[in-house]
Length: 151
Image (tube, rainbow, N blue to C red; front, side):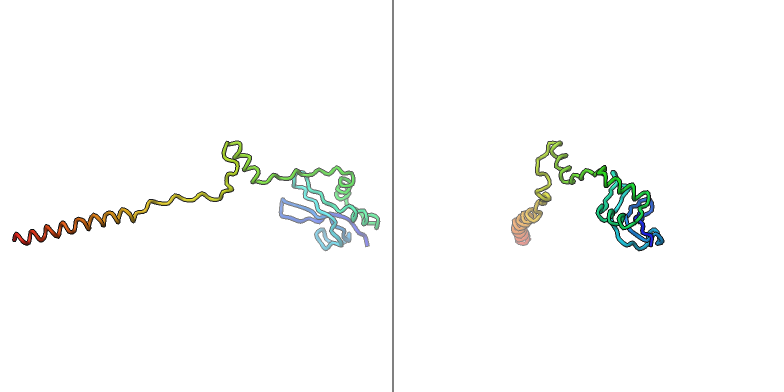
């Protein structure tokens, strides 16, 4: 059985990523693998290359033949010329830096949502109107009685 170390294509159209696998040379490109020993994402900047180098050397010692692309990847990992991506800064830190640059308070946004302003109570003016109506009602009643008395 001829064993090869090659790339197994995964991902969507125009967004490929690969797994570095050990497989029989007669199987399909994306067929069943004997072992997965790494991954390769060429679309990222810099490209992500993650290969278990111990397993790769084991399979090479057993007679597995790497493809040209895998041989180049193994060479990069062996020599240590692997570029690493800088870790992303969290969005919260970016936000706090922007607030500090704008001159706002330091802990902006940590107090939670600001409470809404309460609307003025409309029941109180109605109570005043009712009191005015009650005051006017006895005066009207007195006027009605005096009108009846005159008649």
